[in-house]
Image (cartoon, rainbow, N blue to C red; front, side, top):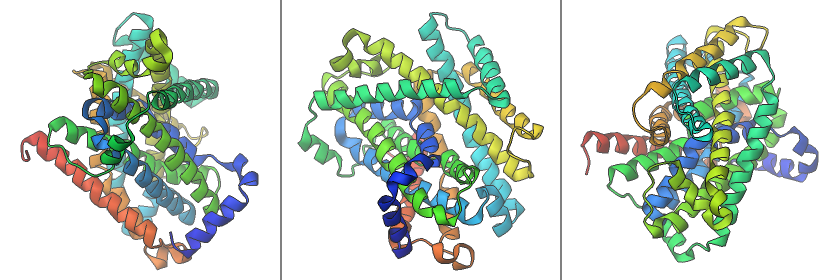
Length: 415
């Protein structure tokens, strides 16, 4: 961060007691990022490859923080969403390209999440049927449009927090090898197809076009202005780097320290749940299922909302309950998600693939935020400093590299 950014962060820390009650936007983003897809990808990566991909997990938390900070700055400086910003700066064509990019990634995520929701519901109830998709779509669509989702969301977040706490306790209890962890912080690039997928998915769970674009809307819904930039810096640091970083790292280490040494192949959700047996014993499966169900619920609804935000911003609608067109945009995402349970393949691996595919569409918005925040004519005195720019460029290059490498290996262009 530059001198301005640094002074803002210092001011935020010094008055943190009075600011705590005003936290929010980055924690909404963190809750979306810390969903079942990230849970699955980091656990599978640790269980399959041990500590060798720890560097990706740690770096993903740092780059998530930087990109969400830039997204918050962009939204606060302009006082509007990223799609409208792009249209005013570069024209309608670029705005439409960004909207399509974000909407496709978001609706793909919604479809994968609905497939997971249907799958987990079948495991919990003992009745596996694609018709669960119609039930959940109707219920969630009604709650999102009419209101009343708050209680379900709060309960879901409590359950997710409990499962994460179990992973953290497990990670401490099983005493991971510190030397192996240090070795895992050294970047390495396993050539296997699955390793390339896991690296792209881990990064895609943290640095994803949906949550980056969404943050420009959440800060504006809170009514934050440029005098709130110090709060945005602290909010993003705590929500993304600390909370999300601990979430993904604890789950990864548990997989690497418990599943990998026992050569436990991960084929389904119960294989992942086995990582909690050191703490929960026979309750590991039921507790993990409850937490996974809660994680899907707490992630899929903001995903539906994000699609509504993108369409409303593009077409000039009001993103509120008063505008029926915004309702229809949300319901469109719900309807698209119904295709998820009908897609072939297991829902666990589909969550991972969804993150990797989302990463492929992310470099565009990173580049746009970097350009905007390095333009004095647009950002004024709030342009990026050297540190944020350096990490932003690393984000851009790494997302391009990991996404491109996964695609090339998948197509057989790399060994």
